[in-house]
Image (cartoon, rainbow, N blue to C red; front, side, top):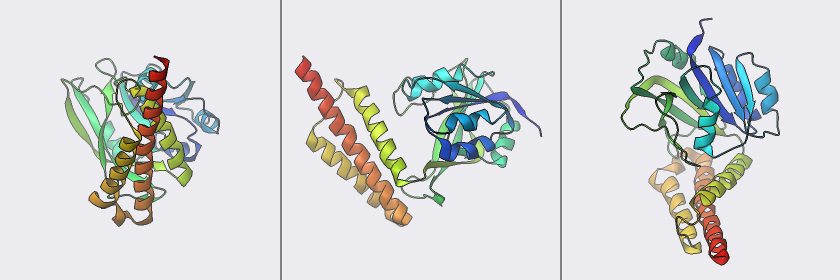
Length: 254
């Protein structure tokens, strides 16, 4: 098997045992894969150790942007393909990477298909186009706690042909765990910076459901569409209600 030697794959993960094996199987063509495990309590670390091309690093979560930048420092190569533990590359995609002539002035994006369990979600989420391949000597992720992205000012962006399959949720519990985690990070990141109120939390949640289920035709995704729309509603409600509580606590201290 011809190996990709000039690109390192970097993944940050926490309790990713459900999806990690499929993700790592799709990376067998890479010589260098870094798995940065954030205090995982399931079999994430055990799975990572079973792959000869994977370097397991254990470390704290510093927010998505900073953690991804820290994880990239353990890579052997300057070119970094940043992936999630629930993303699976196809042989066609890896072949495209092999044939790619990398330029330091260019960033490279992937097209991501999103699934709930094994169902392709066409409306609630649709396909994402995200910059994921970059030279760490030239740029890095922003330091955002959430909604991190690669700093792209002054760069051209080239889309890599073929798609990457994304399996972010395998159970209803996954939605609950992630909405709690993301809403907490959002509130902590914006306390004292943005205002909020119970009314704002309510209407943001309500509009999020309407936007996902009606405007984006999420109802055409069937049962999965309802679950996703409700999850979006709950996430936005808890983002703003947690921010309201933290701002209130901050005002009381002052």
